[in-house]
Amino acid sequence: MLKTILKNNLVESMEKIADEENVLSSYDERYTYSTDSTNITNPNEIADVIVFPLNTHQVSEIMQYAYKNTISVVARAAGTNLCGACLPKKGGIILDFARMNKILEINKDNLICKVEPGVVIEDLQKAVEEYDLFYPPDPSNLKVSMIGGSIGLSSGGPHTFKYGSTKDFIIDLEVVMADGTILHTGSSCSKDVTGYNMTQLFIGSEGTLGIITQATIRLIPKPEAKRVMLAYFDNLEDTATTVNEIISNLITPSVIDLMDRNTLQTVESFYPCGLLTDKTAALLIEIDGFKANLENQYNKIIEICKNNNSAHIQTANTKEEEDRIWISRRSSFGATAKLAPNVVTEDVVVPRENIVPLVKGIWEICKKYELKTCIMGHIGDGNIHPNIALDLRNEKERNNFKQAKTELFELALSLNGRLSGEHGIGCEKSYFINKALDPNNLALMKQIKQLLDPKNILNPNKIF
Image 1: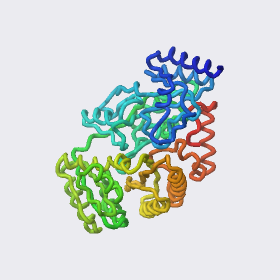
Image 2: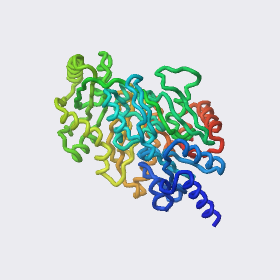
Image 3: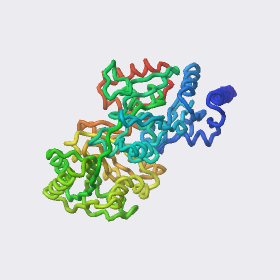
Image 4: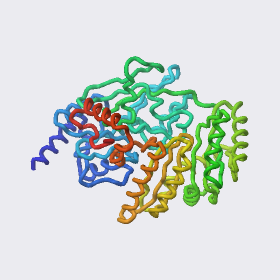
């Protein structure tokens, strides 16, 4: 009875702050918004209330209430993350930012834009392109992924190799702290070393240090033109050699991604677009820049691919052909979902020189545990994503996956790698964080968390 009274008081308090139409409290609604893309929702771990704030002032008021009453708060964007980063492990309040979705400013002279956290990344990219500007970070779910979640996890995407990930494009954040204090971390200046770089502290922190309510984003001029190609190989080592030689020839592709045979076969079955399915792997290569310079780069890359035993090269000569290649690349997750009821996408990163032993090791681990796996990833920056298809209702498959995941993380660490390149840690990888980080580094992180969130109400049970 006491728990019900407290919950009713919480709902009523949220309705006073954010208005009744922006608050959800039925079980079905709370369960729905207590999920993400990890397939690990616990019916006993759902939020007590869902709130859609409309502005920073409301977020501040909500945090003041939560801090006073020691109620956990989880910030949620589109919920497409793959590490359990927005699961409400201790119930409490979920702040869903879908209704704070305005692009507040696009400034072509200063090459910046200001956005609310609910802006969809593809919408942002299209909006700035109208000014001949470019926002490069492009996670595979960019059609639904929101900038707030992308900042919280410092997501990347195929264009990271040349341009960098989210962390390289955020120059100022408006953040609501655990006690409701509103903080600005940077400025609108392209260069700013006035004090500590507080902006970077919050990027990738998964909402454990503060709630992001606004971001100032650095933009760059939109490239004049681009060329896209797919190069197939019968040998995995040849793909790595090709990448190294392209870079050695002073060419920096905007994208250089890897798809293995299982990915090629699965995508072609799901979305027939002329992929060669009998090859060991393929490199998706995109170059961009001025038209006058692209042809020389393109011809040199073709030469390098052929010299390294490329079995076949498909080039896009029209926008339709270019779109077909990109759709095949972005369809890898959806295609894998055709193989089994569930798909789990993992995310590990190693120095590029260790890509071959990483991919071969993943093949061996998944064969050992009888798991269907389609491997793709950003070979240019060493970030590989195994898409593992399985039935999580099957106890044997579930246990095999658990053991395989542990061996996958151990493999990445043994190759001087890390647990995540862009998906984050959340609660899915937190049990492994002690093995991945220097003890002194980990201790300092925990001190920062304690300093900024002394009551541990901001997205608890994540990362650590």
